[in-house]
Image 1 (cartoon, rainbow, N blue to C red):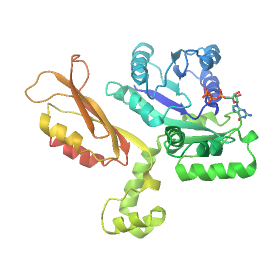
Image 2: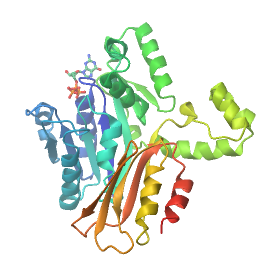
Image 3: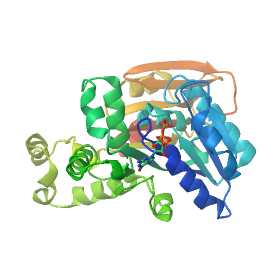
Image 4: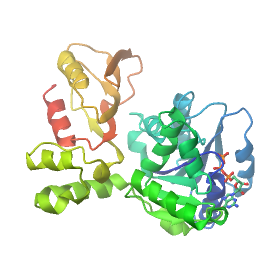
Length: 337
Ligand SMILES: Nc1nc2c(ncn2[C@@H]2O[C@H](COP(=O)(O)OP(=O)(O)OP(=O)(O)O)[C@@H](O)[C@H]2O)c(=O)[nH]1
């Protein structure tokens, strides 16, 4: 059985550890095998110390951010945690400056894919500081992009520190959050306090959105155009693909198990022609006429293929993106054999 993974994200000091402690108190009362993975930027593990008393193993990833410098370490730690502890649930608290896209990248390592069930991305927002943070840095800065992605890709938003936030500011924060992510349920909280049964029953928004997408494609255009831009409306009326940002803005992943060796040139061509909404592809594949397993990596239209010494991993491809056309991608992959 795969381990249910909950990813806690949110800017520095927003209330992630406070929430984690509440989740652990709740889970301690149940017969549940839990592992906590904590990531801190420095060499000192401050928050981890606060979690020692709960009786669950705490795996620490220090001195780097799991979304970048120690992403590989997170993958290795996860593999080790899953094989040695076989937990029901893994709670991962990221650093405040981690971009969820990159963390998902670390979580979707082809060797981990089937052992992990990402239940959801929970984002804690400090309501008293969100507007200031959002405008303090240049809108193009990497940090603002990260802060926005923490909201944009959340499956559930905790708008925390409501006790420190004036009512008019709170209203503005909520408006801004719903512009960035119109789909995630929003919970206003003090000390990250919310119903934990609801929190733990979270599901990925992409699952709902896929159902919505199907429903939308079956209804007359007029019924589905309410939230589209004029350009998208025009495109849809012409039968073209729309970007539909407000409808389908959520990061999703899927895996494709290869059924045998593929043609090297065709597969490389497939990778190079992946559309821009596929942010990442990676996995292991066998090519016709070659014995060695090949590890492949695709990002931003760059493709890297290298022989992989270890024959252990399965032949599988993992994709990360937004609004991906899975059927077309699978059809194209099947043409590579
Ligand atoms: N007033 C107020 N303080 C809060 C609230 N939630 C959390 N805090 C306090 O804010 C501080 C930071 O909370 P943490 O839970 O450590 O935040 P974090 O997101 O884990 O912080 P980093 O690990 O630095 O990213 C702590 O002192 C908390 O007690 C709240 O709703 N209201």
